Each structure stands twice: as C-alpha cells, then as structure tokens.
Length: 240
Image (cartoon, rainbow, N blue to C red):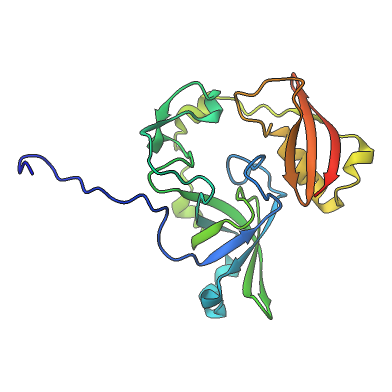
C-alpha cells in the first residue's frame, strides 16, 4: 500500500444492515405505481407492525404527540451486486445522468430510503403490540423498516432550502378517466388514493406507447389502463 495515498476500505455490498424493527403493510404488492416521494398522495394508508422483539409499548411512549414521523427503511427489491456513481432520475425523463448522491434513487451503495409520513394514530393491539397507522407512505407492502424518528418542525423544516434539479421539472398531473362501473370495484375509502396515484402517471418515464396496456396492482386488484396524451383510460379492473 502506498502510504501517500488515502486508504479506501472495500466494504461489502450487503444492503442496509442493522436490525429490522418493523415492516409496513400497504396496498402496493409491487413497486410499480408507488408514488416517487412520500406525501404526494396523502390518502394512501399504511400500517407499521413491529417485529416481535420490538413490540414493547414503552418504545412508543410519547410518539402520539407528534404529527409526522420519519421512516428509515430498505429498498428491499432494488438490491444489486454493485453500484454506479450516476443514475438517471425519472423526473428528468430518464435521459440525463445525475450523481447518485444528488438523487433519491433506490440504486445506491446502501439501499436505504427515508420517508416522512403522517402519524394518524397509535393502536395497542392484543397480538401485535403497538401498531402505527400512517398516511402518505411511498413504500411497498412488506418493506423492512430500520428506524422510526419523530418529525420535528423547527429542526426538520428548512423554508429557504433549494431543491436542485427537482425545481426545474413540472409535476403535471394526468387526467384520469375511470368508468364508474369499474371504479365501483374499489372500496370507497381507497378510491381517492387510487385516482391520485394514477394521476401521478405510474409509467416509467421512457414508456410512451399509447397502445400498451399497463397493469397496476393496488388493494387486491389489477388496474389495467392505457395512456394517450395526458389522459389515463382505465380499461379493466381484475380481482387478484
């Protein structure tokens, strides 16, 4: 080893590491269609169930006094053997490369995600102990959670912060045409969330085939749709 050069240890790429303390239950059994950031669809409901060894009610004492919490979790379906210093953010159309540490891409040296979600309530369940009911989550069903921290407005909110390349792109919503006879398959409390998920355009940014039928799994149904221009047309709803 050259003593004049800094030593860079070769760390194994084994995922997030640490202890899984909980898992979240959501209406998304697959990654497709999940909002790309937390809070974009406030109506999305999730339930956080702690692993058996962390089901001590004392661990969440006082948490109900906070309106939001931070979730530190693992991109469990995005593991790779290696990593790339640059990625192509969907917000830039998938055609521009940006440094991985300037993005929230799941393809990172350590596949760790960070989400701020609203804490709706803390329930004390006879079997599962303390259960957290949250909304606005951008996580797939079963996602492992490594830590939960309270959101602190005076410290966590930075009003004059800059958003980099994300400020240069528009979040234009699509118009959603969902025939009433098909929408009625979905329970009333989940309809608004589903409509907003579709309006965010769940397709990969490079997909523009107007004849292609896409399938979005949500709340036990396969929602099949086409996109023409700025309009999503739902063509079929199939029970999974």
